[in-house]
Amino acid sequence: MKNMAIAAAISLCLTAAPCRGERYGGEFLNIAVGARAQAMGGAYGPAADDASAAYWNPAALSRLAGHELLMGHTSLFAGLANHDFLAAAGPASSKLWLGLAWVRLGVDGIPRFSHTVGTPPQGEFSGNENAVFASAASKRQLRLLGRPFCLHAGGSLKAIYNRLDDRQATGLGLDAGLLATIRLADLAGEAATPSGGLGDMILASRRPYLGTLSLSAVYSDVGGTAISWDTPRQHRDVRPGA
Image 1: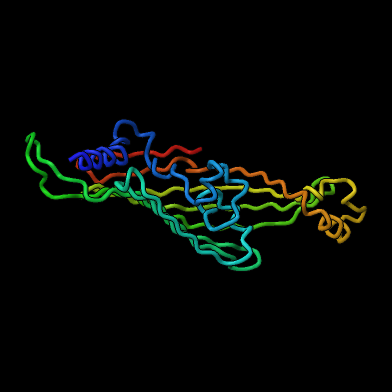
Image 2 (image 1 turned 90 degrees about the vertical axis):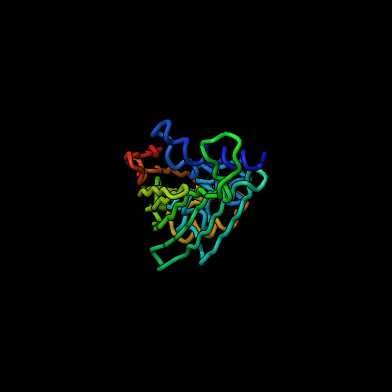
């Protein structure tokens, strides 16, 4: 009975909480994806360089050298809730990178009780929240004050589908991101030549230990993402842009 009560409480937190305020739609998307990103405390936007970039910063997809498939599964609340992530990404051409990702948070086997106190459960139902990201990115080599750097740009169109028992909700959102990377060796005065060409790359390649400086900016839910429920009384949750 204790597990049943906890499962019901989790379901209410995951799905019914937005009914108290429209600002909290799509909260399941705040759960970080990717083991490496979670180990970094969520500070993964500038460092993203794998298929999970579709979630963190779509611009970073253009850092992938090849095709990747990434999967993740997390059991929450002693197994009462499950968080899953699946992503595939890679270059489509020399100038275009594509990615597709799926995020799911679900609670299964929630007991259904009647309004009469003390009666046994009458079957079970489930609640789950899903988001699918379709992402694209590109990059371009530029120069600033004579120093070479790479500018990445990308965006994600995400479709949200939630289900609680026999009720459903859908929504569409848009994310946009920028990422600038520059090798620190290129910033050092002695690593640059007047020509700013092959000599720069040769000298910089001799000092790889200096690493790379990455700066990123991400705007999630551009214009706000509305999630509409098919309830008798029309209700709409909104995930604000950030």
